[in-house]
Length: 336
Ligand SMILES: NC(=O)C1=CN([C@@H]2O[C@H](COP(=O)(O)OP(=O)(O)OC[C@H]3O[C@@H](n4cnc5c(N)ncnc54)[C@H](O)[C@@H]3O)[C@@H](O)[C@H]2O)C=CC1
Ligand SMILES: O=C(CO)COP(=O)(O)O
Image 1 (cartoon, protein in one colour):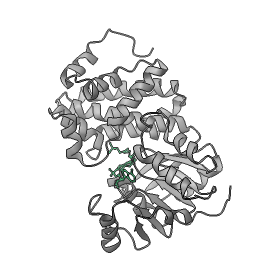
Image 2 (cartoon, rainbow, N blue to C red):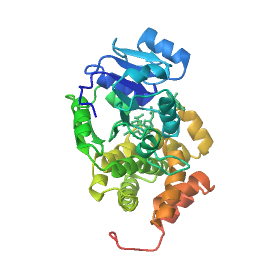
Image 3 (spheres, rainbow, N blue to C red):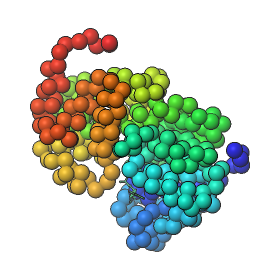
């Protein structure tokens, strides 16, 4: 792999996280290309430096240019995937068809696993673009806070340590600290599974269950996430890191979490369709509940919280009943 300095980047996806990445990286990378799919939005970003639909209060600097033409991204050394998980394979295929150079670095930031295959997103990208260097970025990273220069940390995972270190150098700012890891499975499963627990916490808040109940739920969610994630190939310590408990905490308690907002609306009695359509943004926990429920069954792992969420989202179970059933399961030791 070429060790040339990474001085510019293209960001695929001009929604909340794409905007946040453009804002974060603009002081260090020049130029930055923001690739979206809606002509009117792209024109508005170039004319006003703002996205009328996502993080509208955030002004991008002059070195960020937006386009709908994915081919323009082929000339950049680093491509940052900031589209929903459901769009990752399509995006990788379009890049492959367009002749993406094999040395282009691909950084996956979406949090989910692929719906029909159960594959992690770095695996999806690797399958379509087998020769490109690949890394993932995850952690407690709400776009709204990153885009307004509020402090946080992230973990950058890659099988190639030198690539992780090169990306760490880029993702280092006074308000943004990054760590490296080689546990892609742990990072990606943590990022996907926490979305489901954020919906669960939102439901608990919406039902008015109280702070004790939500803390208990999130604690048991961490145990479940670790048990499942290890069975699927992640390392235990990763789930107590930024992409595990770090992201779990922020999405279960932050006002910014879209998954939490969907759960809160469900707890208040809205249907899933109402909750998702009033959100108007991606809530990965909705498709993730289906795909991770299936992955847990294939791996034969006990996942009572994910099962409860599957019941609410996909099997017509009422939220109060599912929460009651969680509490009244057979007694067991805390650690087993
Ligand atoms: N918003 C956040 O705070 C964070 C989001 N993420 C992850 O980043 C990913 C993207 O999330 P957001 O930007 O927040 O979502 P969003 O709903 O704000 O924006 C999604 C963007 O992707 C575009 N898009 C959707 N389907 C597409 C397709 N098939 N092809 C091309 N573009 C498509 C949409 O037009 C929109 O611009 C998700 O996996 C999310 O979990 C990760 C960290 C934080
Ligand atoms: O992953 C996130 C923050 O780290 C974003 O979570 P939501 O998709 O629930 O908003």
